[in-house]
Amino acid sequence: MAAIRRRGLLGLLAAAGGSACAGSALGRSATTSAGASDLTGVWTNAWYTKLERPKAFTTLVVTPAQAAAYETPRHAHQGELISEHDSVGQDESEFPDNGPGLARIRGEIRSSWITDPPDGRIPWTEAAKTRLYIHAQAPDRADNVEDREIDERCLVYASATAPLLNAHDTNLVQIVQTPGAVVLVSERLHQTRIIPIAQPGGPDPTEGALPGWVGVSVGRWEGATLVVETTRLRPGDTKLDDDIYLSDHAKVVERFTRTGPKEIGYRFEVTDPTLFTQTWRGEMVFRPAEGQMFEFACHEGNYSLPGILAAARAAERGAKGAGK
Image (cartoon, one colour):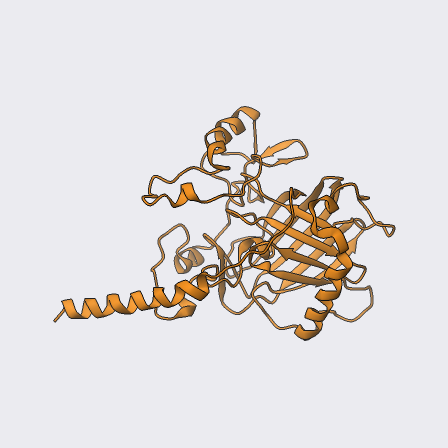
């Protein structure tokens, strides 16, 4: 199945033709002849708005004055504040990708993607918060490579999984659409989700697919909306970003609808009874990217991990020596 999917991906990307440029998301019909949304192009979900509601806001929809008060001090550094704990200048030297400001959805200024629960926060169970150190400092383990976080190991990132969340940087996604499949190619790590389109009464196109970092996805069209269901994530709890986890019990349902010549409406819901007290839901908008998607060469795992593990062993030897 994996080999078939890789060969299929090459054909799908070739069929995309010139869609690698940002202009491919502009000037196209919002729907295909069959009535489905035309999602083809390179898009971005870079906004100041993030998954959970920041402490600066108490409501999902904020006023222009509230938005200006939040955005203005962040404009100087592409949507972020310089951390008072950054003693080496890393924040100043980085180039965040946070878009023009807080997201506007149907004319409303949104403080978070999460729309339910009403507080805009992930509804963790108490057991999950304790086990996963949610909003707490987790131990810095370095006994082996698998102790390290998956983005440090260049494996997967939140902006490449279901749901598609925006991050500090690298928020582009290329969508390649054919009658039989839709492919989502993330800028970050070039993570690729090949989503076969199930046919009514047809076989399960995901039969035999193995669990993986981004799970197994299958799509269907409901009118102009592409509905994607993702299950079968790799066993255990997978950390996607700061305080964002999914387990192999998770189910994510995404809905993509072309809502205008320069916008894709995106809604999602996440269910995982081992982590959350309820299903949580969110809403986002994608807009056309301003440029092409270029290579994201992640080499932290190649260069840094040996040093991280060696430093941990050296610290252990030093602790033993001090105890003699």
